[in-house]
Length: 161
Image 1 (tube, rainbow, N blue to C red):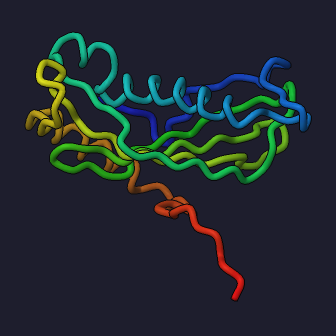
Image 2: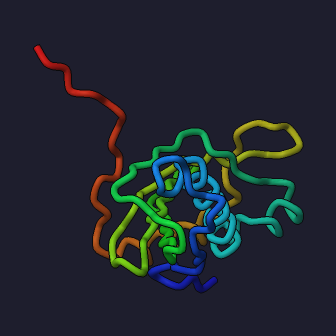
C-alpha cells in the first residue's frame, strides 16, 4: 500500500457558518475538520470504511488533544497534514496538523490514540498480522519526516505560588 508522505489530501475553506462571536473559526469546527480529515487518512492507511465492512474490525478514539496555535478566519484555505506516528498491538497514534494555506502557518495540532476493536464483541482486539505489518511500514515512511513539535503534551496550568 502506498500512502503519500507527507499526507495532505484534505483541503477546505472556512465557511461563514463556522465563524463565532469572536470573528474567527469556532473551536467546535476544528473538531469537525479533524474528524473529516481523519476519515480520509484512515481510508488511505487501510483502516477506513472498506476495512470495517470487510473485516468487521475498526478503531475508536480513546484519547485526543487539540492545541490551538493561531486563528482561522472566514474564507481561509485550510490543508490538513496527517501522519501515523506509532503502532502497537492494539492501537495507533495519529497526528493531524491544520494549516492556514493563505497565511502560511500552522493553526492547530490534533493528536489521538485509537484502539483497534472487534466490532462483533465491541472489545479491544489485536490487529491482524498483515494489517499491523502494513501499518508499521506506513509509520516508518512517516518517521522519515522531521519530527512534529508539541506532540505528547498534556493539559496543565502553571500554578502561581
